[in-house]
Length: 194
Image 1 (cartoon, helix red, strand yellow):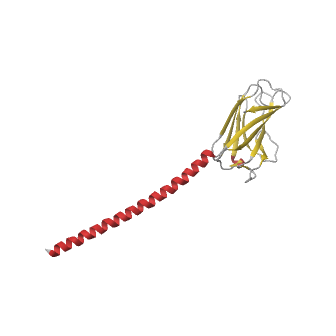
Image 2: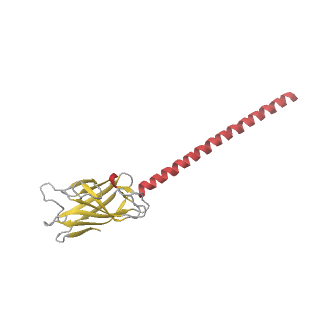
Image 3: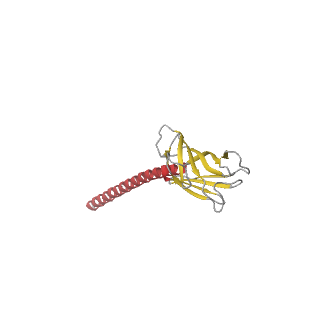
C-alpha cells in the first residue's frame, strides 16, 4: 500500500514538473512572439508616419505673361512639409490640368532650361543637410516649366482658366493646388497662388 502511494506521488510529481515545463515553454513562445510583433508594429508605425508626413508644401505660384495675354511659364516656390523626409526630385512627378491642357512633367535638373515636358529646379535657399537633386529640411526651391500648346489655341494659359496642379512623390503624400487665372492678364508677372 505504501509502495503504491509512493508511486502515485512520484507520478503526480512527474506530471506536475511536465506541466511546469510546458507552461514555461509556452510562456517563452508568447514572450518571443509579442516582442517580435512589437518590433514589427514599431517599424510599420515609423514607415506609416514617414509616408504620411513626407511631401512638399507650395508657398507661392507665379507666372510670366507672354505678349498675348497668355501665361507662358509657371514658377512654384516650394519647401518640405514639417516632419517630412527629403523628397527626391527625380522620383517626383508634376501634373498640370486645365480645360485645354494636360501636362505631365518629369525632373529636368537644376542647370536646364524649363520646357513643356520637364521642370527645372532652382535652390533659393539651401538647408544645413542640402543634397543636390533633393528637397531637404530647410531647402526652398523654385520649380519652373513652360506651358504647352493647347489644341487649336495659342501657347499658354488664358484668362479666367481653372488650373489644377499635383506634385506626386514616389513615396509620401501628393500635394494638390487649384486656382483660377485672373480675368484680365496685363502685367508681365502674375501671382496665382495663394
